[in-house]
Length: 198
Image (cartoon, rainbow, N blue to C red):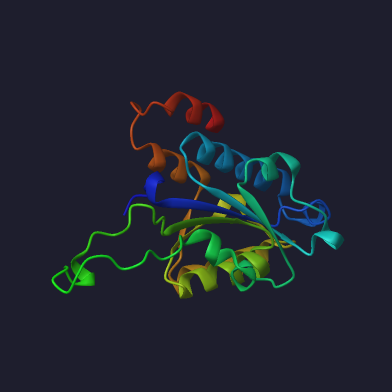
């Protein structure tokens, strides 16, 4: 199934000042995260950030942080454990109608629900992995943007991808996401998004 910008949200995990210098392929990973967040902004996809123990590890990259609607400061490795899920899922609406209303399974899904979560970040085998697994458990559709993720070692990063794929997450790349969100060269934002990829 192709990604749909109107059903997507982006979560950027822990691209922090004191962490990034030890991350494998950090400049490339951060550049892809920025492209992803910029494409999300152009296409109206909500973007959220997390920061692990920011008093010790610093804040996320300033350019990336500026593209996020909000940034969750956390001590738990999983952002879901600290309330990220509540940010991603809109509050439940009060039931409407009467006894003759359609059964729940026949109602159209709430248009405000964006149940596809694109997630990228560091470290892939710790905070990103635990957050993504919790999102899967909370019944979100999770796509891991692999070229915008890393760990201190390549082996740990790759082990995280193996485990996430086995748990049901889709593995995608920044370009896959951007072009699936666009769907067509006739999209009004095509030139602007394409310029990010060039």
